Image (cartoon, rainbow, N blue to C red; front, side, top):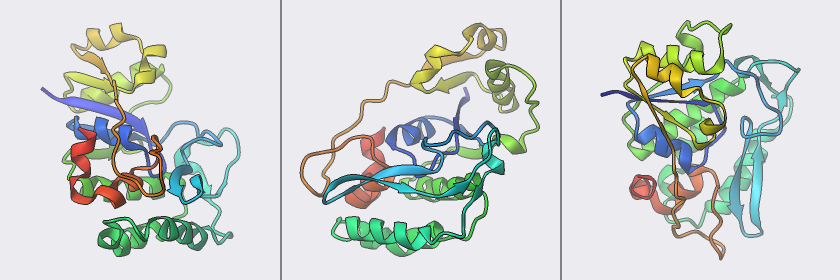
Length: 226
């Protein structure tokens, strides 16, 4: 039995992405699909003393570029600015000091492509969470693009001998389940129930980047996800 899940390469994703990753044998970064501006491809949210705040990586985007073509705008001093926001927001978190140096090294990498940067950050976070799934990029698999969205997911799953495709909740709106059935695969949909955990700064805010959980809970973070 092999479970595969597939998702775009997002920036410092929220907890639900890591739940799918932790419950799968293979996680595929769908890094060769169209980039969506003002989405989670190049930004996510952290919690500050004033409430939640966007952490954004500036990009040089020209429609209709795909994600692994979109360049980071490194002419702007965003790394230091974002790091100051992260550090000032989490320096009092119980486990920030444990991850601070290693996370900063990855966060301040001089990457030029947003998908490369997102994948590197997610690999780091998956390792710290203790996730064992195989993590690969769709752009490295050689699956043709000139086919339907569902058909492409099926072809990716076939490469890993999948028996189950673990879809995000939104898959209900577009997946053709019969295509998976024809390939002897079942489709299951995520039903993620966001956990509540100790946070800084008052009332709990759900849906933040996974770093909020990691810096507050540390090595036991995975227990709140699965």
